[in-house]
Image (cartoon, helix red, strand yellow):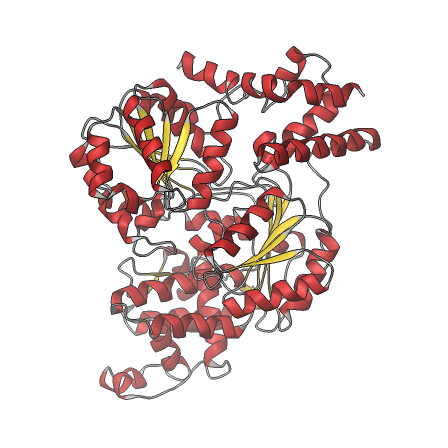
Length: 599
């Protein structure tokens, strides 16, 4: 571990490990398997990069996206770490060169997609090679319930069978309890050390609103809060992506489209521009972004409702990787809810899968309709408890309009109880509004005291009430994915007359107005002269990045430039004390940055 700490400082330029990095690295060095959950920007890559440098052989990194491999290899090569990737962008001769480097022991890190790894020729090559470890990045792709499911990931359990003495680490930033269990089961990680870090990203401000004209709302949000910042705008459809990108461009912003319908060359071109230029906006479907390492994305905007909370968390996590203030903004409408339900219903999936998807959609809607702190609910979804409201979401800063829903809640809970806690929300709603049908009559539920006691609300309004009651913890859905509603301990005081009366306040069932939010100041409060130096350092970084054909943040992230502008180091030893400056980058770029600071 002393060698690991030396590498952290000399190669990566950092003084100390964060989160559980130290324990994870120690476990891998000792040859143990590991499953780690760490938020985006938490430093997952270092967890396998340092052990790969210490252990004998080459670390094999399984990554789902070609663009991510390119970024990681660029970053490693900038640190003089011998790294490469094997994928379809290489010619046959280039692939042979890399394979020769692997077998000769020259490489310390080799990135490839799961499809490439599972190729018999690749497996034969690896059998003749000394392997330091296997790193399975974006491990949530193994889950059939997830938003990024890749069937090839489910075959990666064979690594345990073929290479029993090689340690494996599975890494993800997004996994609820069901997905974690599936990762362990599918990848044969039953004996793995499990490290779960906090999912909280306190620098991200969450804001969600229901909007009938989301394009105008989007422009107000961007123009008022992020006039010159880089950002990502997610749309549900390719048509929406094209239209929104064109519209933002007409407003004077450089906005590039990204979706699966574009040619691979154009997608790659637009992605590289976004990574390497400052202040660009990428408008994309969910096909964009997994593993994107750009640290200075200041906002992620959703023009439509994501399919589930995992997708929402993963996509919003691409904002503010540098730890500075960032925004996760979303505008959704009723058509999004209808669209998601139709998409699930019309799919060829089995019924149990559809029920789980509906359950996840309802959880996402519950997050949208909350009146309390969104961060508490978001973290609770991943099994993490927080006692105090965050003070950095729209509900904390501008509490929404609410109504006394105590009577409606008692009616809803009573109906769930009297129907036996055996049905989903739609069935209970049908009973509440007095909708008689064959199924209700066969169960004699049209004779219940709760039949037709809720006709003061429409079925759509009741669905919103039920979503909020689930979000507030009065109701829970079954864990098997059938969507059956169950009363929780929190519900009973409202049903028992002897208990102390409670009041239940829910979000208003009509669109509430929201106040304009004042954006918090940047993390580093630079003076005018410091800001001027920071901009000069950024210009220098841009020139160097262009010369070396890498994204600017691969040279140094904004946080490192900010520290340089504040500290103003004048010697190599002083520059080496700046976070993010290691020995290799000092030798490669130190003179240029010190010269700019001196001037």
